[in-house]
Length: 394
Ligand code: AMP
Image 1 (cartoon, helix red, strand yellow):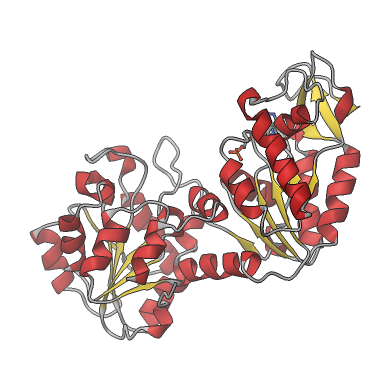
Image 2: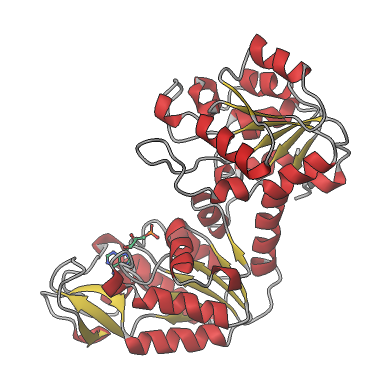
């Protein structure tokens, strides 16, 4: 794939439309509770400012299903971005039509406009070429910096590239692509994957795809119980996808054939109820009883997983080791985050929960790269070509 990055395109003084992902969380009063997705786009925005561009920002927020939904307005984002940059960010309520055309033609170098939630238009999610054409008409150069939306082929990241005079990836998208390639295409070995979270079903394709790339896979979290069941263990009342026990067995068989080590928890922190205050018991993984729910990995698993991580050169991580939202069952997840930070390996973390775990453990600054995409990153792990990235390769 040959994608042009923004610093290889002449954008000096031009009208640059940047597709960003400002799908940030709001509280009930529409205050932004986490602006990571805004700050993640600053390298591209600041570069465009340095080049004297007129910047038009396009984003979606939530799932308004093609009509205006006031709670999904991007207006608060314009205010936050303005305060971060210390300069005006003009908010345009109607991204298509005369108002925006007039505002854009009146822009001076260094001006910034943020368009209202593009998903207020039904064409966006339908990848409507006409919407793509209208957006492209507003700019000289189109830049995609919305990695977290790259697994969707919509008008503002796909159709638009058919009409834009020039299209390139911004620095955030570049980082996401380049770090992923570094880990998966030609990694320093040993290369390991830590895969956790609730369900095997959502990670099955990713597991299958990485089997031919990694040296080992650590499997933790609720999904580990389907694997433990496949080994013939009683998993009590733990999360189990009975219909995927055979698939779990196949993955373990395939791994053995390929010489890929699969590390499962050898001990479990269990409780009689899904409750932070429920009494905790540590049991060997093959000694769970009918009344137990496995909610975290045990101390011996932590030791084994950490040793493995510490001896790696490259590690990717998606999904927590337990029900880590409950502090009494967060130890395994936090320990994995710490081992990753201390390993000195090239470490890449993706997926909302693993990212929160890394932040919660206070080690985020020692992780090589934290992906801004949950679904998009998982699809990369699945080996898929993301439509938003493929569109830049036209
Ligand atoms: P995912 O979105 O698939 O990465 O799953 C993340 C969710 O899995 C988190 O909300 C965790 O609380 C949950 N989870 C992880 N381990 C367990 C477990 N052993 N039992 C129940 N839920 C779990």
